[in-house]
Image (cartoon, rainbow, N blue to C red; front, top):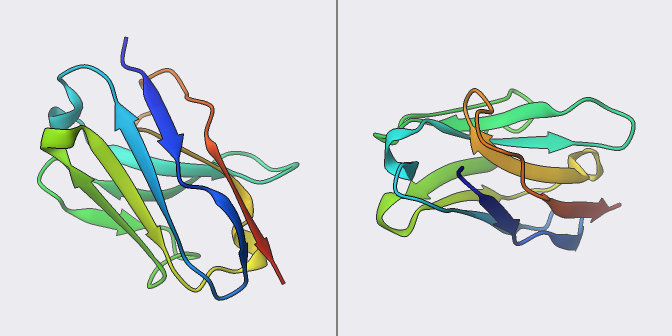
Length: 114
């Protein structure tokens, strides 16, 4: 079973930046389309950005132009560079495959103050 460990969250002022990382166990990371998700208090988990094994990306309209997803296959690591953060970006951020096939990790908390 693939395990996912997210890190890099924290408290940041509006307009600031953070870089999230997600390390996957095993040797199948490179074949999966991966995604970042987030869940704000009282809301459902939502898809933030996706990336194919070859590096093609897509992102939600709410973060387009501000967040960039990337991956390092040899390191089994997924990244999310978040710039121009807004208070509405406050959430717990998770990584998973594009169809959420892996067991969810604990996520990493991102808090953006106004």
